[in-house]
Structures are given as C-alpha cells and as structure tokens.
Length: 503
Image 1: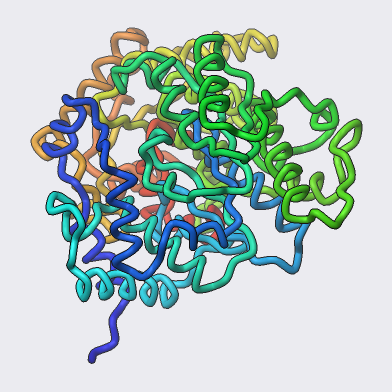
Image 2 (image 1 turned 135 degrees about the horizontal axis):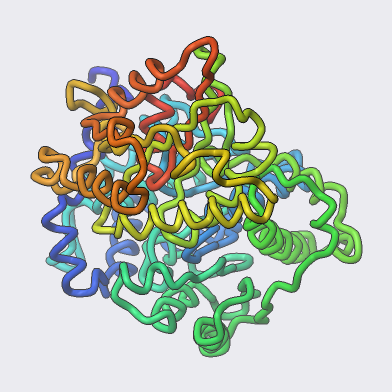
C-alpha cells in the first residue's frame, strides 16, 4: 500500500465539510441535531471505543460564548507547570493555519505524521465497520465531529494524562459532550451577541451551555447576566453536579502580566485557575495542593504568565518586513471587537509608534452585521483615546489611514491551502465581493470624511498583503490590525509568512 500523506488526509477531511446551502437550511430549523450524542457514540463504537473509555482522558470540559479557547490555553499552561512530567492534551477549534493545530500535546500541535496516522486509522475503521444502529446516521461524521473522533483516538493512543476539551457549538448536544464523567466542567462568558445570530434567548443559550455539567462533577461558571446565570445554575442542580461555583475574582491576578493580552483575559484566567485547582485536587487525592488565595501557587503564576494563544490580541513583527507590525485578533462579535479595540488602542500597541501608517484589514462572515461591527470598532477607539487623554483629531478621521475589506480566500489565483479550504461560504456572494463592498459602503457612511481612495475592496488575502507591502516605505512603517474573523487572521498568517513568529 502506498504511503498516505498529510495532504491526502486533509483532502479527505474537506469532503466532510457542510456546504453553505446545507448550513443555511440547518439554521432555518434551529441548527440542532437531537441525535448528535447518539451518533457520536455510534461512531465511537465503530472505531473501537465506548464512551466510558473517554473517562481515561481526565477531561476538563469548557464551553461558553466568549473566551473558551483562551480559558483552555490558560488551563493547559497551568497544568504543564503544575505537572511537568505529564502529557497534557488540548482539543480546540477552529485552527488558524493547519488543521493539526486543533489537536495539541503540551501546547504543541501533533505532527503531520501523527495526524495522518490517526486520521487514517479512524477513516479505515469506519470504512471497515459500516454497520449502523440507526439507518439515518451518515456513513461518516461531518468535519468537526470527525476531528473530534481523531482527537479522542490520538489522545487515547498517546495515553495523555489530562485533556482540556473545548466545546465546538453549544454544549448539551455538542459531540464533545459524549464524555460521561469529566473531572471538572466550566462555562465562560455568555454574551448577547449570539442571541441574534442563533435566534435564541440568552436563557436558551445558557441552557445548552450548562448541558456539559455532569453528575458528581464540580461545575463552574464565570459571572453571567442574571437570566443566563439562573439557567446555568438550574442545569448544575438538575444534572446533579457535585458543586456549582460562580468564580470570584482573584486579587492576586492584578499584579500578574498574563501571557494573553487584553483586560478581558482576567476573567478567562480566573476560570482556568479554579478549573485547574479543582482538577488537581481531584486527581491528586493523596497530595496537598496549596490554596489559590490569598496568593496563587507559583506553578499557577508561571502557567498564567507563559500561556500562549495565537491570533488573539497578538502583536508581532513581520520577520521578513521589519517595518510592518501585525496586530492580530480573531474577534467576530460586537463584544469581542470591543475587547479587541480596547487592547489595540494602548500605549504598548497602537500608540507605541505614532509615525506608522495605520491599516485595518477586516472581513466578517455568516451573515453578521458589518456596519454594526465597524461602528463598534470606531466607537471603542474613540472612547479609548478619550480615556487615555489623547487628542483624537490629531490622529485623523477614522483613526486608520487605509482600510481593506477582503475575502478569506488565501491566494490571488482563488486557491486556499488545503487546511484553509472552506465550503461554508456563499460562493455567489464571494464571486461578487458582496460582503466586502457592503463593508466598504458601511465604512464610507460611518466616516464620510474618509479618503475614498483609501477604502480598498480586494478579492484575496494575498492581494491584501501585497497592498500592505506597497504602503510601507523607510519613512512610513505600517501597523496593521487584522480582525473580524479567525479565518481571516489565519489566512494572513499563511499569506504573509508569519507562522514562525505567530504560531
């Protein structure tokens, strides 16, 4: 048999993506598959596992609307410091540049060889065992569910000592919720942003998120809006969690420089501390763990300071173009864009080089309201400048010197790296650059004095990076904010050759 390659694995994986029409149809009926857990259990059986096997992974299960990836990154870093001889698995989504970023051990993505091995072992087992308990179950799971199976298989094969498991969508019916008894569970911030997008009330969203709570397992949540907190707490009670804790603030965090930038990360770091403390108390029954108040244990401190999470409030120098600074944040809701702009307008970020040409690269997807998003960015920039006692007029109208609205297509020839291939976009809209023109019109409306020649609509990320290179001269370095979409941030990292410094 010919040797199988990573590229072949990615090609097969991409056949499991839903297309735009399928996703739109699912959204119209609420987007919930009531058989999701039953199907996941069926797929597990077909590749040789039972749900109880997953308990060996020692899972910290995390869901939420905002901050769940960052919380997982903090938790992983803390456990690496607290248990340096352990192998710590981390499963998250989406990825920025390479699919294998979703499956990490000790913070490092599994290798292409490992991914290929585990991918095809799952593929072959599904092919060899096509007997299905329910005739409506597809022969193979769709993209995210398939990768979840690969992650479970990889972590069990590698015998990881602990697993940080991030929910994909929701919680109750998410395929990651197939783990019968995690060690500890946590819910990050639940935001109003997703109410309109999902067509659900905040109470309904909280009910889904709280669905990861399990009998006899400690349940945590960050402080939530009243109706969300009531629903999450009820889930903890109804699902017989061993305890329910709304994470109090930790004064000790105020003196730390967290590895992830932005003041919103304090809440995520706080949840990670409580999750890890409860986790270690559970798995180290014979060991005495120091308390987390009034001072954090030193291994927790190091974990929080060393945490890394690419593409979120990340400032990097271009390794090939020293005059370009990239400010990357995959924020894609009004609330997260507020956090992004608060981080960006800061003496250590945007205000560090006042001579730079300021460029915004922006895109948004899935029917989100571009004008609302751009308005939020501008309003937050204005309020931050006022807070910092900066003269806004001295920085020019609209803050930025150029704004670029581009698609998430990576290359100028219309191609994307296999890992970045996306079937879920409306191709008619993409061909006509409909979203990008709408964003340009929205910007012109919001900032009528802005130079129209400096509002750019471009068909690919490669075109965008090339324009940034043109804007740079020895006398005018460029500072580029990329936001609105994690897919866009990943594409910029790929097209601009930033992987070695960003990932």
